[in-house]
Image (tube, rainbow, N blue to C red; front, side):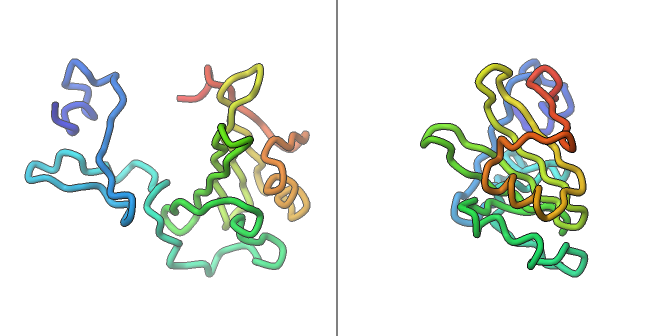
Amino acid sequence: KRLKDRLAGKHPSATEPILVPVDIVSGTANHTADNEGVLPDSMPQRYNLQRPTDYSRRLPFDDYPDPSEYGWTFTGSDRNVVEFFEKSENGTNVVKLDWYFTTGTVKTALDHPRQGKTQLFAAQADPTLYLAILQNPRTHTNNQRYQTRQNIV
């Protein structure tokens, strides 16, 4: 099965999950002679373990500290606008956090007891809301919107 055929929908198993071998230490895809296993450019780099190279447009660190200061584990970044973090919840569930550090938008993805897999978005979070989300990713406010599994593509 060739990855590029599956991505183009030409292979019968195009609806199956795409498993890409990744080197855990470097966070890069393992390359083969025919490029099978290479991550497409359009996929986010959630696990590349690379910090952004340009923080010139980042909101102030004093108001918006790094989530790792609140127990989150940094996993990667993409396009100098978003950093990815994860945090274990009760030792079983993993909560994912996307921090769009140029706009203040925070996205959390977690398991809700009744609604299942849920994403919460806080667009242009002020510093108080940002810190509340870092301390408790289940923080709900009137400023957030959410999507349940049925809405998540």
